Structures are given as C-alpha cells and as structure tokens.
Amino acid sequence: QRHQCLLFAELGVGGISELLGSLEHTMAFGKVRNEQIDGKPFLVVQGRWNIDVLKNFLDEQELEELRSNTDARQLPRLPEHMPDMVRLYFDRDSLFPRRVLYLKRHRSTNSLRSMLSLNFVDVVLNAPVDENEFNFVPPDKVFPLDVTPKYIQQIRDAANRATNRN
Image 1 (cartoon, rainbow, N blue to C red):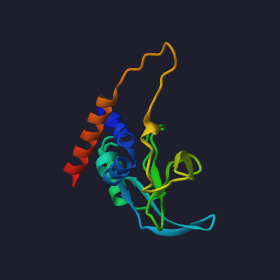
Image 2 (tube, rainbow, N blue to C red; image 1 turned 90 degrees about the vertical axis):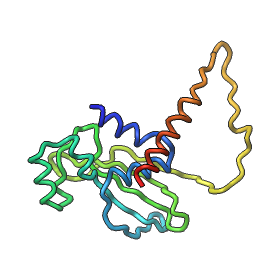
Image 3 (cartoon, rainbow, N blue to C red; image 1 turned 45 degrees about the horizontal axis):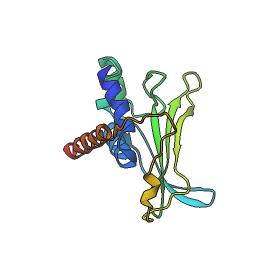
C-alpha cells in the first residue's frame, strides 16, 4: 500500500511542474498530435502507466501479457480509484498545460470515461503579482496553524526526487 500512497501523493504535491515531472516518470506516452478545440490549437499527448508502476498492481502473469500486447485497448484491470490513462492538452504557442484529463476504461464497454479533469483557464503568464494577494486574515476566534515549513519541505523533497530521476 505504501507504493500506492507515494504515487498518489507524488501526483498532487509541488504544483504543475512536479505533476508533469511525475507523469513523465510514471507514464509511457504516445505520439503528440495536433488538435483544434474551439478554434484554438493544442498539442495533445496520451499516456498510460509504465511497467515500473504497474508491477505494484499486477502479478507476473499479467505483466507478461502486458509486455507482449501493445494494444492500448487491452489495458490491465486496475483498482477502480486509479485512472488507467492520462491525456494532456498543451497550448501550442506557450506549451502551458491547459488540461490534464485522467481517464478510466469502463469494464464492460471498454470505452474511456473522464475520472478527473484539471482545467486551467484565464491563465496569465509572466504577469506581476501584487504581494498583498498573499495576505491572509483569519476570521475571528480562528487560530491558524502555519504548516508552510512542512509544505516547503515536501516541495524540496519532490524537487530532489525529480533531480535524482534525471
């Protein structure tokens, strides 16, 4: 169970850059394709869990079948709470990831359904940010607990893991 918890934590800590780094580390991606959505150009790439991740969920026979079968429609059966694939939509001009879509294959129809979609809208790149945006005033009789150092350490640990992967 530890490997599952680590995998899910890694997917959610450290912002967009760590998310993309984690996906690169844990997924095998196909070819990039061009797609138009509402008249806007996107680069779209789809990935599925790599063997290093799947070996934590599958037995040896299932892994051997997977290695010999490259048909994406024959994905292994993973726990219901775990997505089977991810699809990334990058703005073609800025390469900013506008959408991260986690997909699950339906057991009976074999069609993909959306499990979770992270959509980034109204994104402004490289704009100045007023530091007052980060001031927090707690409501009356609420005593905040500052866990900032804990999260900073998690981000540093995630950055170190990403550096060590390369």
